[in-house]
Length: 119
Picture 1: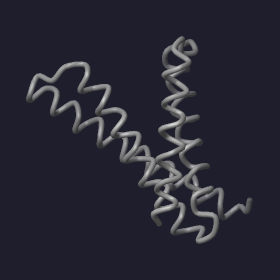
Picture 2: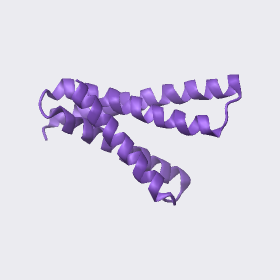
Picture 3: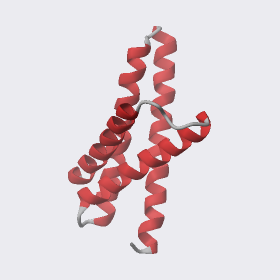
């Protein structure tokens, strides 16, 4: 992987986390305004993962031009790994629910791959 590839991946990941942050702010606003329950949070977070992954995959595919789906898969995987590492560091422990963690990894990877294929 070239140095140029590494730089755009960092920028792409930052964009994905900006999309995530904006999605979380919107979700918090909607929860406060409409008094939504915990199910809304679970669905909302999943939708945010998907939207962020697709956005990152689209950008990756457009920049790399070849093997777009693989670049999208890589970005989706990196997105999850950073999200996982930050969550574990903030909680001070690894998550206990490995099934949920695996599902989230799968969602992030699939969304990134889909974005790459759509580019």
